[in-house]
Image 1 (spheres, one colour):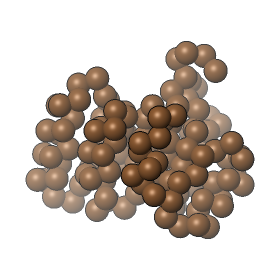
Image 2: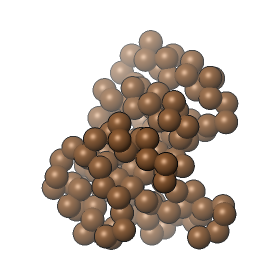
Image 3: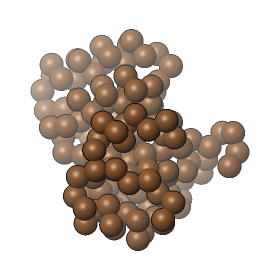
Image 4: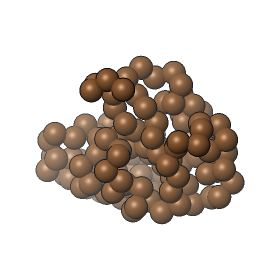
Length: 126
């Protein structure tokens, strides 16, 4: 791996996660998919079979987002979870990409923005 390789974890392996995970693992330059998170065992099994045995798998989001092997998190989880998970990722020192929409309510969007402003070295984007 070159020093410019971004080590990425993906949370959510449902319909869109199953599209994003292989794209990150096999088709995105300077990116290494190192971890995946889903509370659904069948989705984790799919990730291991599709991405490979070196992929770290998590059922618990809090443990996943604190993994020091991850530089950035891609959130492909239900929209109702996006704001809290984005905040957790930023507070854990991770860059975060959130599948749209950011949240269901404006107040949650504003909370994510406020936390993002406290972590200017992290990139947060939808």
